[in-house]
Image (cartoon, rainbow, N blue to C red; front, top):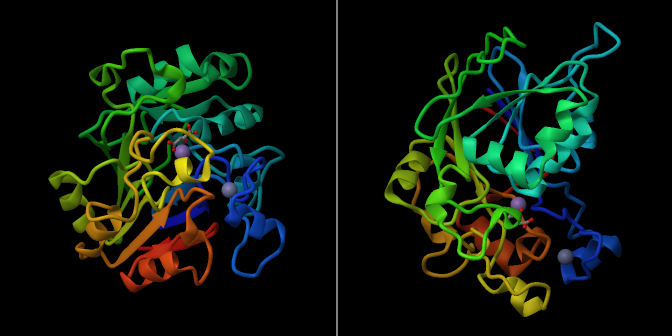
Length: 311
Ligand code: MLT
Ligand code: MN
Ligand code: ZN
């Protein structure tokens, strides 16, 4: 299978349009310790079969341009067979609007909770209905995605995708005054990709708020893991004065600290461990920063746009 990181930054990208944090400023100044990154997205394909887009970022137009690897045979064709969503966050779904030019109904896979958010909150599914149309396939945590469930494609992919549940965190726009998290079961999921030809296993979780035993086991059994690298510390945005929300309140376990994701990842036996969905304020984006050195010393990689994993 091939897994390609299309966008390694969290929502906002790097630099973010209105941010003057040290990292964003360094990019603008052209420092050689940093470079631009687009917003969180991934593409995956089996040894046999088409590319699937995992999350549709606002940068999807440029990202899909970089994915084209075959000569077109007709005037219109899509480089992807479908879009799978881990959640309904704006940075993972706004790109669906850009895909409206599709000549065929878009094949989108997501949980019922995500569908509800994209219908009643950020109503992009209602809008798309009047453009390309959508063939929605509901996916269930704890089960496998049926990539042939939409009659649009007869893709004989060697890819198996398993859905697993992560702690519920509805998007900000779906939160009521008294959030009852059980109402949002399935609002955030992760995926495990398994190629039936090569046997390779990759697990992807861009919004990880805790390392439960079952998640640790799943990650440990994967050849490669791509996980939430959003914030270095819990009060990162508060210290910079850019938000009142902590990393944990946003559903992201920070990297540092005794219970931080770095310590959990260091104990796992996966061959490749990679942080992705990295916020522009996270100092690991700066080459040679003390924080980057700590991550690398732990045998963990920092994802970059275009990084391709073959397994
Ligand atoms: C997240 O990753 O938590 C969200 O994308 C943050 C947001 O845009 O509100
Ligand atoms: Mn995000
Ligand atoms: Zn910034």
